[in-house]
Amino acid sequence: MLFSHSDSPSGIWQSIKHELHRGALDPKHPFRYVNLGTIGKGFPKVRTVVLREVTQELDFLVFTDYRSEKVREIQSSPMIAIHFYHPKKMLQIRVEAKGEIHFQNELSEQYWKKIPDGRKSEYTGSLAPGTPISNPDFGWEWSEKSFFTVLKISPQRIEALQLSKEGHLRIQFEKEKDWEGQWLVP
Image (cartoon, rainbow, N blue to C red; front, top):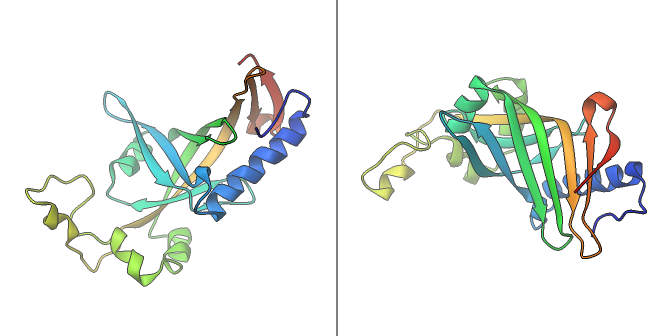
């Protein structure tokens, strides 16, 4: 468990922020892999992405290919959701956020320089992600051009659900309210 009914909202907020930062720093932390939801054509779209960094301002950074479906969806509607789950602590965190795309700009160039050479090919495919191919080997053709993109996810509302045999607890924090906690009925 991360928090209990006797914890203060400010203490819970500090614990949540700590876990989110750990998710970006520790490859084995359950928050390392996060579910990202966007608004697609006709249906919501959800996929798992890797949390690369959580900034001091509490923005989440994720890397992707500029030609990916998620980039087009965020360009169309920047309102997105992300979802974390910690199985050992029985903790779910849902985030309502605004997505920002950084491609061929100062932020993306800063992070591109940090990508190990052996991993850069993940962002230089000849074909865009999701392109139909007749043979799986065709998906491994590379170009010289980089499509590396940083998604900056700026939370507007963060909700935590602590599951417990003694009774579930639910609390939300809103940026507009300076991240002050508000208990909710679970």
